[in-house]
Length: 341
Image (cartoon, rainbow, N blue to C red; front, top):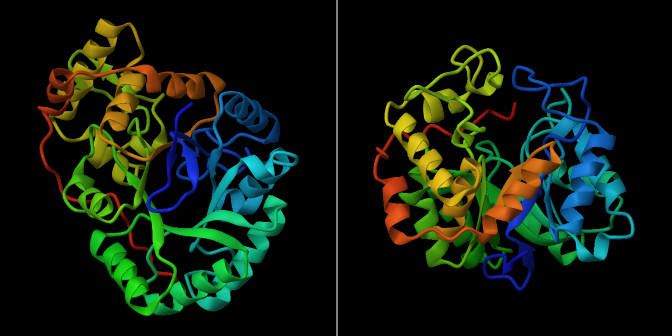
C-alpha cells in the first residue's frame, strides 16, 4: 500500500480509501434499488480485507443508511481506531425537522455528536461538508467547524461536491478570517468525466489541497461490463443509476456521450495488452493523474483487491494519451445543489 499526505496537512492516508456508502441496511436500497447496500456481515468481509491490505482510510457519512454505515464502521474499528483515518460528512436531512439538515451551527453541532456516538470514537480525522448550503452563510459553517477542531472533536475539515467558486470562496474566507481551511475535497472524476480538470483540480494543486475521487470506474462502465459490439448498452442487469428513466447524472455523463464507447474500448484494449482488468486501467490512470486517494465503494472483496492491484500498474505517456484522446468536453452536470429546506 502507498501512503501520501492529505493536502497541506501532515496526515498520511492510503492511496485507496474504502467508501462505506454500500454498508448499512439491505432492506433500504436508495437510488432506485439494485441491491448494492449490504449488512454488517458482508461489510466486515470487505473491511477486514481492506485492513489486511494496509488500507487506513475510510470514508462514510451520517446520511448513509440513516447512520447505520457509521455504526458498522465504528464497530469494525474497535481496537484499531488509532491506526485508522476516519472521514465522515454532514449536510443532508436526517429527519423531517426544519433544523435537522444543512450546515448551520445548530445542525453541525448536533450531527458531530451523533456521528461520534455511532462511530464509537471521540474524534473524527476528516469532517466534510457533503454539499454547499445556499441558506447558511459560509462564515457560520467555517466558524463552527473551526470550533470543532479547537475542541478536539475533529482533526481536519474538507469539502465534497462543490463548484470550484464555492470551494475557493470557503478557502479564502477561512484564510482571511483565521478559520480552519479545507485540507481536501472529493468529486467524481474518471476517464469518462474529466470536467474537474477545468478548475477544481488546478485549484487544488495550486493550494496543496488533497483531491479525493469517487465514482472512479463510472459506476462500473469502465469495467467494460456494458460494452457490446462497439456500443454502451444499458440492459436489465445495469444499476438503476445508469438507466435513463431512473438514473441521476450517471446516464448523461457515462452512457449517453457517443465518444464514451470508444474510450471504454481503448480501456479494454490496454487492459488486455497488459493482462489486467479494465477497471484496474481506469484506476491506474487516476493514480498517474496525481489524485490523492481513490474512494472505492464496493461490497465485494475481489473488487477491493483489484483496486489495490491497480497501484502496481504503470502506464506509459503514449498509453495515457491513447486513453484520453477520444474525450470531448461536456456540461458540468455532476453536482446537484439540493435545497436544504
